[in-house]
Length: 239
Image (cartoon, rainbow, N blue to C red; front, side):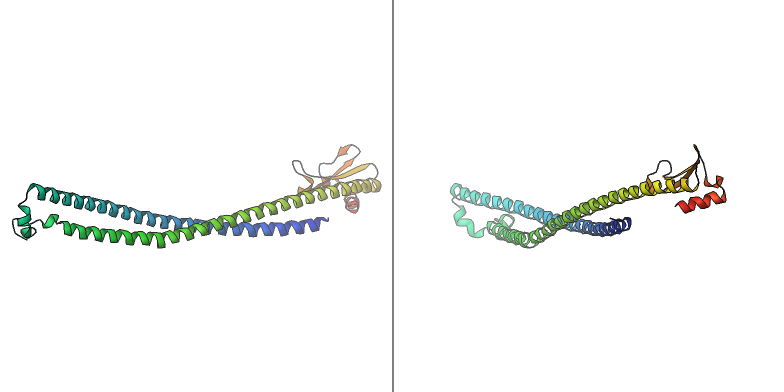
């Protein structure tokens, strides 16, 4: 595979990676939005459940008070037989037996109202809020699945890029060794007693850059400016 072909494949894989990373960022943004919506709906459901619990406490309280009142009436009827003859006066406003504040029938009506409110609230929670939460959770799960797919695709593309990069480096090094060998041979033929080579600067690899080195005998020149114009021309011909 030629260096140019490898570079083209590398560039194509890099572009795919950039696109996948954009998709991943979009997924993350949508996940964040869904998490926020889920949190809002959960808080709404918790608030509704709290109200339902409060109503349940009130219902239990009124039910207990109603039961206690009924027991008290039954006990008093047995203990005080005269109540039976006076009961028509019970609950009369301003009378001797004004029990409006603790009227069992009134408490029963209030208990019924509270039960109706509780049932209505329970239906709203079960059908609307819980439905919205389930939908949000479903979308959240689907996005997690999509993100997993995108992440797997990203790993595959990265693996291809690494493989192409390694192939590019290997091909460049092979080409460098061949060119370096031919370059040294041609230059020493054109200018006997000399040596020439291409090598990477200190601390670098061949695929990062190369520089020309020339030696006369065993002495390597520090710079090409030390060569004459003719020597530099022969050096250029060798390449």
